[in-house]
Each structure stands twice: as structure tokens, then as C-alpha cells.
Length: 297
Image 1 (spheres, rainbow, N blue to C red):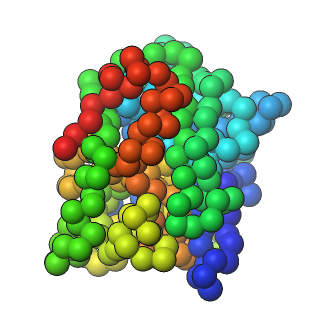
Image 2: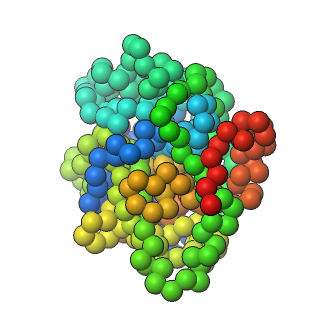
């Protein structure tokens, strides 16, 4: 699901992993650390109407059954499976195209269904970074799990307008965000040299822009270059962008697209701290289930 297209004379890349990769892969780029802080961040595997593997993304469980991701991930998919193990793909064997420990990407390992793994046959798409014009791509998706997954904590949504105060703030480059996901760690023009640790990792970045032709109040633009920082790549699409450092669980956006096919530098995430997005989520899951989501700020 990583698509490249030209827009405003800029090369824009959505940050999902396609089946064109010879082996499904995973991790955040740059100066990353293992993400043991966010057990609700999961690896989303998507299947077509025939049950064949389509691609993979990341996302966040907001309640025991409501999984938030990117719209270009759910768009066109008929079913899905979500894994919450941090090391879900560590034992992936390119020869068998399977991780026998977790069952990724074909099944949930014995004893994990409803605990660390779940299936879904209800997928919803608000919009897509691949088909909807910038800046308002509406790139949000929902996956409703068939089995409720009980975790020690869930992701929380930032209240509508949470980021608005940063739009004109001086020194905004000092504002820290944390991205988490299962995307590629290092990508080169030679696919044989692409690096993946197949684990849930996280890295910090800093605010670049909230008000530009590419953001327009709908997207969050960050930069993860420099010592101690990192960014996103293929497979990180739909993963959460938290306001603050590693311990934060306040989701302000979902990873959407980048400006470089090799995942170097600037990242864009679609904001979820808006009335429109949260009203859409409520319309899908109902007011009762929406009330179970923690809203911060």
C-alpha cells in the first residue's frame, strides 16, 4: 500500500507496506527504541475478498474492539488481522512467508486469539491519502475487532483543537512528538539492503508545520532528522503519533505519507484532534462505544 504520486511538484509517498516487498517487514527509522510503552499499538494485516494478503499497516486500539489506523490502509480491504505482540515478525521466514511463533501473517498463534491477536470483518474508511486531494485527505480508517482484546491500557484521542494552539507558536521546533509502528527501519534503492527488525519501535520527532499547502490544518508535519530522533517508513501507516515523549498515549494524528520514497526526513500524519474525525468515528461505532474512548485535553 505504499503508493508514490506527484502533487504540487513534490514526490509524496503513503506509508503503508505493499505486497511488492519480497518479505513483509517492520520498524521505525533513525534513532529508535523498542516500544514497550504502548501495548495497544498493533500490526494490522489486510486481506482481499479472497482472503489473500494485501498489505500491512500499524494502528492503535482505542477500546477493546475499536482499532484506529489510516484510511488508505483499510480502503479496498475485506478483512484483517491485528497482532499486538511487540516482536510479531521477528521469526518471519522468507522461505515460508510465515512467522511460526505468532502466526503472522496467516493466523493467530494458539492461545492468542482475543488476547494478543484478533480478526476483523468490519473495516471502515473515512478517506485516503492515495485518492483524496491534499491537504484534507481524510486519511483515517477503523477496524472493528471480532474478538475483544483486554489490555492494561488503550490509546487516548486528543480533544478537538488540541494542536491548534501550536500553529502560530514560536519555537515550535521544540515541540516533541513520538511515532510508533511496525514499518521499515532503513530503505535503499536496492531492496536486498533494506533493513527491518520486524518489531514495534518508536522514535521522537519535532514539529515542522501545521499551516502550509501540504498541511492546511489537517496534517501534522514533523521532522525526525538529527541525533536522538527518528521517522516513519513503509508499514508505519496508521500508526499513532503521540503528543510528547515516549510515555505519552495521547494520539494527535495517524501516520499518513512522506516526501521521499526512501523515507528520509519529513513525515506527515493526518490529525485526529478534530470535530469532523471524531464525529465520523462516533457515527461508525455509536455514542455508547465512543464514550469508552478516553479524550485528553
